[in-house]
Image (cartoon, rainbow, N blue to C red; front, side, top):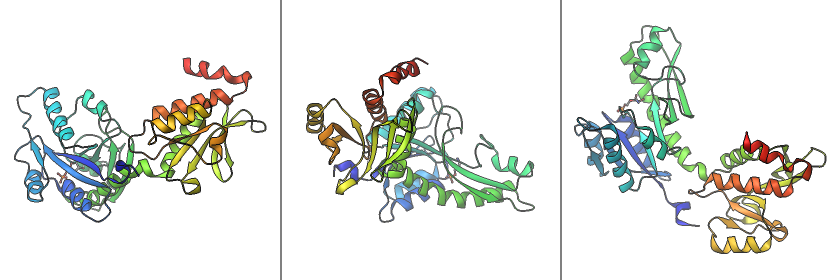
Length: 325
Ligand code: GRF
């Protein structure tokens, strides 16, 4: 197995205050088998109690007060610290700063946040007071991917917390914190493990394959497959292979130009391609999906190529049409 297949994911946690979520993430990371480790705790307030806690626990820290700095410059310094620490993910835990779009864009899919409400309800501040004032039965907490729009990225996990009669925002906030300390470590662990989770990989392949024109899913030898054409006479353009015949890979089998291309690619990039049992002989290449550095645009490209190679002439033009729209 390549190194990245066994190494733990390195995470930088950004904080502004107490850092109880950071502490929950850190202590969970010290349980056996944690798929992530905290490589850095960084704050925009050098006096943040979270920093003292991290230091005491032997975690590298970085602090830079934002006062008087342009937002871009402050973001850039925080980002540099994360990169210098080798971070593959940035996790916001009570980081009270709006981030610049450039920074968010560079970490797309690799930056998480925790927010104290059941998103999409109550983005922004004062969530507990707002939920109580509205007479809601439940408050809650959500972990989500960070996108440019505030508190609006894909929701990765949530816990609902019952609002009790006579609840105050502070009392509710304290219970929400307890829930957050359960939620965040679990969601982060699952998220950094996704690249090696066959269910997740299949779901992504399915979305890409079925987005191509006139496609449907059909099982083949007990494994998911994708065909182009009619239900009756369609042809396979992709197969999903989960550690088939003892192979270490979860892979996407697609048609390539032939054995020459297959062998050249497998030799040059053995971390990315393999020759699948049986299928290899007839020009199907295995695009390895369970690697931390997989580029999904590549997988999408292979699916299109394979679709084009297999699609009947009568519909082959549809892909260009779909492209143009
Ligand atoms: C949490 O309630 C979190 O949802 C919000 O900020 C708070 C941070 O608390 N984004 P702590 O510093 O982790 O204790």
